[in-house]
Length: 431
Image (cartoon, rainbow, N blue to C red; front, side, top):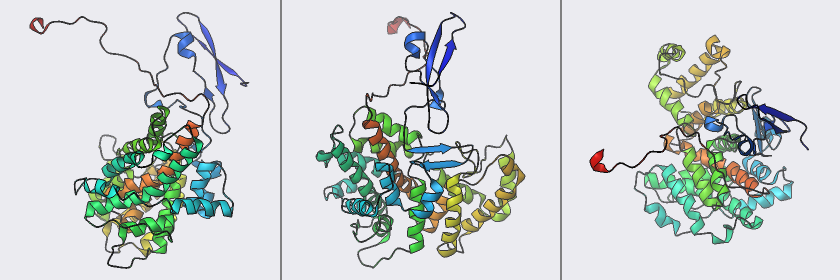
């Protein structure tokens, strides 16, 4: 039974309605407006759904004011320090941190699902040589339902689990193959002796004629980035996956829809925008001028990688990744690359500038992840692909949670119509 209700009165008619308030375990409660339109005749209007809880979830909680992010109740700081990507993936899928045997079994399953069907090779060859890797990702992931008919019955929990395992396991293989296609190199098969992230680096950067050994710092850094990007509540791509899934679409199509949404520059392209900004600034001596432009409201220039739409405090992920970024740059960064020096100087100035401190415009996770990717030799057109690999775990967990809900319905947002009222057709000769 609800603890309390919210009474709404229509000032025009005097009609009242009591709306139940749904309790949250943490964060703001939600007013249930499920029968509001039916009883009052009004729609609620919320562009971008910024004040609307589209679902209930046990997966991820973030508090923008406090700078807090938790997966299944575990602070991201603890997971980043003590865990690894595969363990956190298990946590997101099954709700609890695994015991050693459970983790070993899960890791073994993911490793042995990493191979792609050989027929997919011809699919990759069908893309133009300079196709964007994200375009290839959307097409190939969406095609997986044509290969795995044994895991597309969404009413079967076992099918859902198998599909989830396949998606998490095959995403690095698809990503690496997309990259290899874009640079004209042969695809590299996965190596079951390597870690999840180590295997990705192996498939991306090794060639058949040479031995390849991933740098431990690179492997550690990428694993950390993946943990930080696993899930972030009901963002655009996650909401897209849920909306597509609500129609009963197969899981591979749902995740492909999430990849398409993530591709949007306002969502997954922020770290690429950081590097573009640094290239535009060009030199350390130009920083003061660009900072002045950033402070000018009439100037369209914006500092990319600073501040966050949700976090009104320091992005907790940025605190974690900052140390790793400095470690990567000191170990793998090219000292002759002016972008690294420029980025570190910009970070130093922004963290000590009263303008940025007062407005809490701190460097965010995208500022640091782009620098790490560049130091690892990952090209900018692959940045969002890296994001999609990590976020696949969150998408899959969100999709599984949604499908298992009782009385789950197809998503159907409404609209406030402001077009022409009814009018009659006029023959073309009389117009």
